[in-house]
Image 1: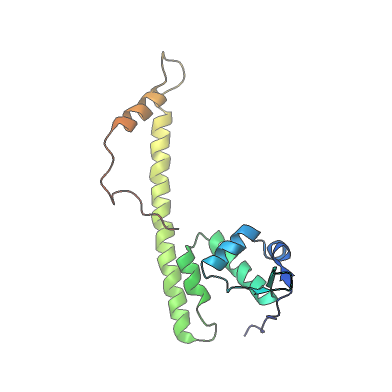
Image 2: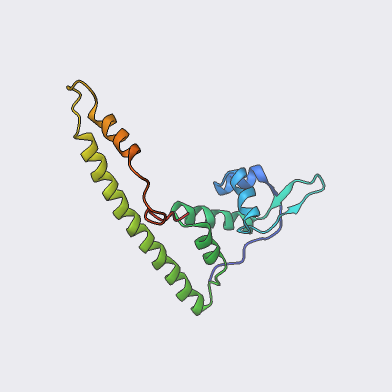
Length: 154
């Protein structure tokens, strides 16, 4: 079981950013998005952050580094370490994220094939660039129907 972390607010935002690895701008953003509780303010009206807040910021940073959406991070933050039902929820959230990562890998492999094929259209020796020609042809093509493109995760 994890030891309780001190929740006494003592760190100003610059120090919190340095110690958590999350930029001050992102700290403010996470606060606005509800991932981080609204912070206590000192007498000078500066936001103050506790060690528990720093831990939470590092947790968020870790999840975001794994390309999790804010909703996925929010779900994981709301879970209780000691609750067995929450473990199932965490597994389910990770399974869904893993499915997204697999789909994205498939999209990236298709993109790589497309870029290679485009690259192979021109070796630089012709009168004009067949890569640029192909890009202009694609730009003149009709747009795909709504919903036909990749669904963005974040």
